[in-house]
Structures are given as C-alpha cells and as structure tokens.
Length: 365
Image 1 (cartoon, rainbow, N blue to C red):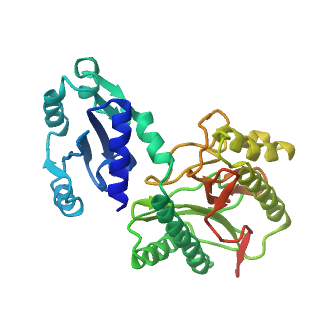
Image 2: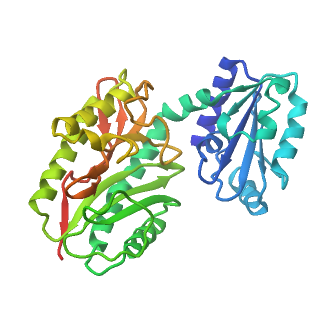
C-alpha cells in the first residue's frame, strides 16, 4: 500500500509539473529517491529508473544479484539487467527526445546523461522529489512511528550491553542481533567511547569501555524502508559534576529546538533556537562546523535526509515533516555528547515520537 500511495503521488506531481518522464538515480547510500519511485531498496551497485506519466516504471540495475531481488520485491516494475548502466539508459532516453524529461537527484545523474540535458530537454526535478520525500503521508508517518518504538527498545538493549571491558563492536553486535530478530532490515549506527579526547562518533574501532567513559550512540532502525533515529549518552559509572552540568545544557538546547518546531518556521529557526542556548552559556564556538555537522535533519526513506537543521537552511517546515532534533557537538570539558529525538511537525507544534527519557544514563562500572 505504501508503494502504491507513493507512486500515485509521484505521478500526480509529474502531471502538475508537466513531465512525461522522470529519471531517478540511486545507490546503496543515497537510495531514497530511487525507493520512492520504485520501492526497491538497492544494496549494491547503481541503479537508474524511468518513471512514465502513464505509471510504467522501468528499473535498470548493473548487479545481477540485485536484478534477481528486484524481480521478486517489485512485481509491478520492469527490471532490466544493464551491466553498462549509463550507456543503456542513455540509449533508451533517445526514445523520449520529444517529450519533457525530468531528473533527480540531479547532482548524481551520470555525466554522460547530464551532458545531454539540452538535447534531451532534461530538467532538474530534484526539488519536486524532495517535496514528496519531506512531506509525509499518514501511512509513512505510521511506519516512522513504528521505527521510533524500535529505536527506544534498541537503546534499552544498548544500555544493558554496556559493561566495563566490552569492546564497542560487541555493543553494536548485540543491537544488530536484536534488530534482525525483530524484522529490522537496516540500522545505521555510530558510536563514541571516551572523554574529552572524543570529538565525534564513528563506526566501532575496538575501543573497550572503562569506568568514567561517556558512551554516545545514535540508533537508526528501518521499518518498511522508513528510518527513525535516537541519540543518547551514557556514563560508565556515576557521572561527575562536569558531565551532569554539560548534559543539562544539551537537554535545554534540544528542548528549545523541539519547542521551535511547527508548520511555518524554517530549518534555520530550529537550529537558531538550539544554538542560542550554547551561545548564552559562552559556548557559541562549538555550534560551528569546526565541531559539529548539523543540529538535526530529516528522517524518512533515508537516515539523514533533507532538510538539514542549520542556520543557513531556509527550507520551510510543513505539517507532516519528520525530523530529528539533536544538538550533538563537542564540549570542551567533557567531550562529544549527544541527545536527540524524532518529531513530526504539526500545525501548532510537533509530536515527539521517541520516548526514551532525556537523561544522562549511567551503568554500573
């Protein structure tokens, strides 16, 4: 049902934009545009899809293994094995030369095809697909709600797995086992272990947990292709005064950001609400790109989608958009700390989808 509803929306949007054909690119990392158009979650190689205004969808894949999977997962899509992906799609586009063709995400369209934009009358329709990706249907929000519940449950598993002497990859393994056993087919997760020397999160490196360490993580489980994320910090043993004081600042910043979310504001308004808390505490330097990447971002068919929550992003927030608000950044006394919850914007505010308490957790050490 989700795939059918998305396809109907996409065809309607194409008609409104006067498009006869839409060319969509995807790979294992940037998969949300492709998944919206085809309902295929690519795992390896690259893909291009042609969506016609009459509803016919053709999916070109350069991996024979992916072709086998797509033929099973996407019965309503014409699947073509194209070892020379770009050449085959480039040739097939000649059949539509007298029609209006759009493409997205335009920045990822192969150069050979992009170079023919004038000849093919190929227009950049990234913004068209972005609007569909950001403004969710009720059924899409329901999938994200279910993913958020699994994010909460997964973090409880993570806390129970955190014990002195364990390697960070052992925690990751327990989470993966839990999620796979509960039908989650993907989970984006990074981790940080240590103190003031830790400036961010990364894939596990084999570092072992010890007393006094802060352990930060973000969990991003996927349900029916839709991701929800949670960010939390715990301490091995009792947290010290500096850690508690720093966490109180992060909680104040996150709650200020969440309070700013409502239809009609911009991503910049949310980021500014978070950053102003750090500025009031004399930590304005730590909201710059020297120490942090974003103050949150969209979630949906991609774990880190638009809009990015930054003070220079003027994207309007509309009802139905799903975001994570997280003032994750480096703290000069205690190190990198994270805290973030997923929300869905409404006309008068937002609903928070993650329910894990906003506290600095501690585990026996």
